[in-house]
Length: 93
Image 1: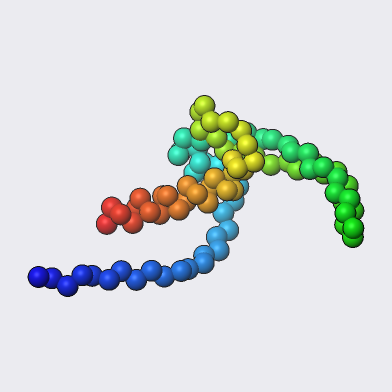
Image 2 (image 1 turned 120 degrees about the horizontal axis):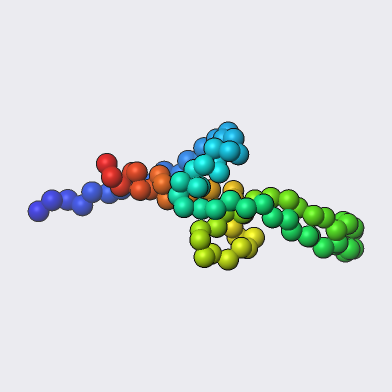
């Protein structure tokens, strides 16, 4: 009878400086299409906050057939895909 191996989990924060074209290439290799979008954020008028309407310009990353949404902002998708990529490469060893 062999004792159970305990797996320790460590939490780590890593900061990366990656240029936008490199992020786009990575996502395209993973099957994503990159498209520019703009979102209109409505004006906010509350008790102590008055902000005018704003237009935000960004990019979304979608797979063919996937609907465009704010959840597909390229940085969110990149973070998710990078985690998946690291998990895939860790399991192979």
